[in-house]
Image (cartoon, rainbow, N blue to C red):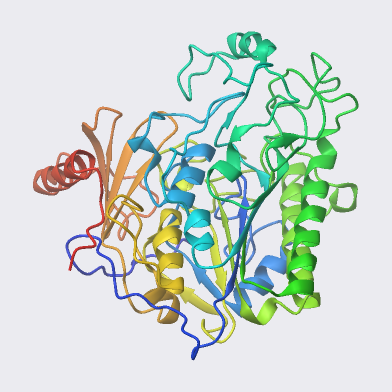
Length: 487
């Protein structure tokens, strides 16, 4: 695939909010909102993004033909947990205790008590809110006396042996704290993480099964071992959360008593790679490609469920990924397209992701949008759709991109910050991209308009640009926000 050259020209000097758009009674019912978040799917996996893809993705291609496909959309981080935090709060996760990597087994909640999230905001506007699938943002695991599991580890500090030892004090019959309900959701069903213990099912704030086996027998490659429900089968996780998501849509269609928000967080194509039997051999790339094909089929199942429930016409559907793919280029397929880098990386392959939005009668079908947007912008955008006035202490890094949804020629962002697994930063500003290390010392500068492959480091030749962008990045850190909503 040839990466589109000549990126769109940007306007303004700082990301600012744009006028809101709210649904009044005269304009009709507020839309239902479905966010499908793939796990580790690359920019070049779907054929609507890469004509040379070796993976059949007919349902994603159909979604793009019925909606808008963004070509310059980014996750705020190139790994899981930080992106999920930013998507639900509109705030960069590096402003929290998590400065690098992700949450690990038995980590406590990353979303702070009292912080406004997309779910709690939509609750204020009469929405029913549900999270189904992978959470990966922490729980308050409790002991037999109901207190939080004692731990000497910081969020994101990896020490699996110590975590397993500390978790011996957890009583899985106790009600959990934190989790999706702690973040404002009305309902949750999932396994938290498919590749980390404890291996069990959770509904709302209760464990439905007990991890009485000290280790998961037959654990798949790419997983940490630990306490498991007897007979736990990792291959059954994705089908079960899909069934539960379809069931949820069926229920909402039967009542139609209130609008809803479904955050459907897939466990694929993340390791362990486990495509369902019906999808094995359907991709010439291999098992990862088959797994992506499975993801595509799930999008089709959600789409079919919306149609059968009579919900499709008034539902805003968003499909994206939490970061780039970990899979290598081989067999004529490049999971991250022509982009440099992969999951965890500060380069484009780590954080530029597929981003498809369908909203019947609002978005022009088959449109392609080259404007710069971030997954962290969902918070401000949804706020604009429902007419919610965001307070100063919420969504500090989220921009309303509704104007560019309605008109692809409108730019909404001048700049955007990305973060790597190792704590590096990148400031995208117009066609330029400055990369710094974890201490925010500039190390690389690329002009993506002329060099989308990030092959020519211009840091020595463009000292004025480097100084200007480094100062802006530092300002965004010091002021605690990158978006100014004041008129």
